Structures are given as structure tokens and as C-alpha cells.
Image (cartoon, rainbow, N blue to C red; front, side, top):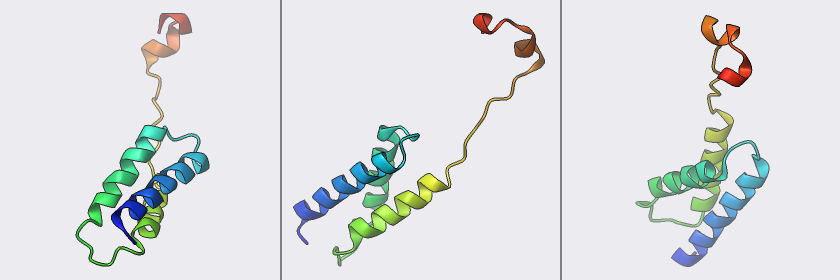
Length: 83
């Protein structure tokens, strides 16, 4: 696999993951995939890199921690328009 082919495959990974995870902001997915792809830059055998990148990215997205803000006493008393 050439370097250009690999980059094309990584772009397709980004597109697939954006479609698969519509609740995750696309720039977050793209940044995550590119960061994971960088981890494989030192590998000599490149044929399976896009597959490994996609698998790692799906794992990271699936294990994301969702933070839900908790209302404090003050915000519970205020009119929602005042927040």
C-alpha cells in the first residue's frame, strides 16, 4: 500500500465513523483518528494500518466518558431564562 492509498483509507475511516457516531462532533472524530494514525507512523508494514486505526478509534469513541453537569442549589431555584 502506498502512502497516498493509506491516507485515502484513513479519510474513509473518518467518514465511516462520522456516519456511525452522529452524536460525536465530526472534528473530534477526525482529530482522534489522525492522532491514532500518528501512533503507527513508525511501523514498517503498512497494509493493516487503516484497519488498526479504525478499530482503535471505535474503541476510544465507545469508551468516551460523558459528563453531565449537576445542578447546584442556586441554579435549581433560578428561572431557566436567567441561566
